[in-house]
Image 1 (cartoon, rainbow, N blue to C red):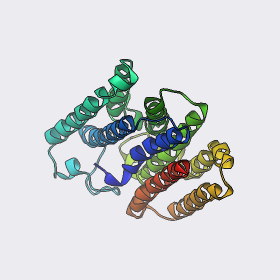
Image 2 (cartoon, rainbow, N blue to C red; image 1 turned 180 degrees about the vertical axis):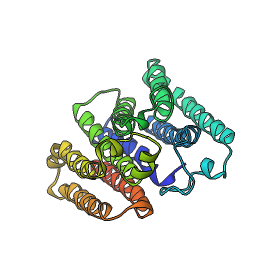
Image 3 (cartoon, rainbow, N blue to C red; image 1 turned 135 degrees about the vertical axis):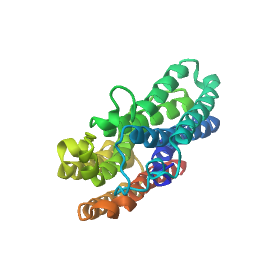
Image 4 (cartoon, rainbow, N blue to C red; image 1 turned 90 degrees about the vertical axis):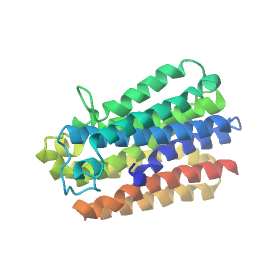
Length: 280
């Protein structure tokens, strides 16, 4: 399930809740359903990644990252396949519960998201194998969940939410950048063309730094609208982000594993803090 990265899907929904609360028009039932859908979709994507990377021979025993159950023989490939599609089916059932709130067009949105869960690791052009993993995270963990959750809570679209969704997506993409920065050598050896492999580890680390800074700038106007003390939140995130960047560039291999969770938790902190501020 890769629990340390799950704050990414949680954070996007919480950020949307903050925007909805700020505008004082919200549906908490929709929010909780969106949260469950987002988390199950991420878990299904993680399961699919484990299964299809094993099938494609892209995971090796003793890899630098966290232990992969299928590759190491802890979980059978068949069990992981059933877990993948079972979890995705559960997400789809919850998604269908949102149709009375948002309309039948959500079926199309849900199908697109479900295809994205699989297309990240499988299909004729797996996104994660061709340097498009970070782009996929930007959309599927930022733009799509934040905007859809906000709409389902408020029945409105909002330009500030669009900027906030891109901000969340960039923060989420940083989690994958840490992963691919760590796995550079392993991925290169099996011809898995991640962005880190295609552009180099230095590029990946610098993009990590840029993503976090741009994420803050995109929501700068929202923070400036409130009380002066609200600015402490983006400042705190910036300090955390820069500190993580400096530490990441000084480490390799398994030493980078904790920074996946730290980067995800920094994103969650930012989004939760925004929602708390919106309440007052």
